Image (cartoon, rainbow, N blue to C red; front, side, top):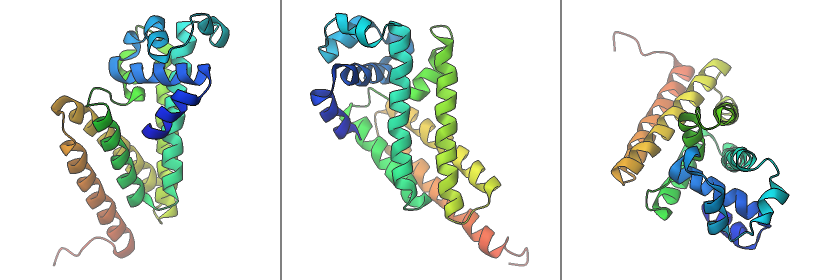
Length: 208
């Protein structure tokens, strides 16, 4: 998705370039670090385009950029879900490893950045981030249900995957290595396979 997004930035509309750029800055600096001047400088858009495409100014640009980023990752989850939950986790890990590497570990998840750093800057951003996380959880849960898990287990596993993988991305940025992402994904895969075993065969007997 990162490569496709860069190509879209180069040939897309001015509005799309601005949204992509704002999401990029959000990933690097959080909501407080997104300024109109930096978005214009990075995207190459003329100043008048702000008022044309985003009459609500910086606040509108921020919220739409967050939705843009969230929808891009939701689409990734939906596309991978048809291949099963294990494949989905692996593709999600591959996506973040590639994205972190391309950005030299300087940028993380824009939704996490909005969720933890926007309460004072723009409270609406936190609510939007919460909605995006809910959509990710629902998409992941559907994948687990399709693989035979019950609704309760599917929802719990979905939340665990999001929390663990997003936390791993934060650790990767701090340590400047993809190691935490791989270690967390291995444990998630073990958890999924273990829960699947218990679902099919029940808990092992204490006599074993």
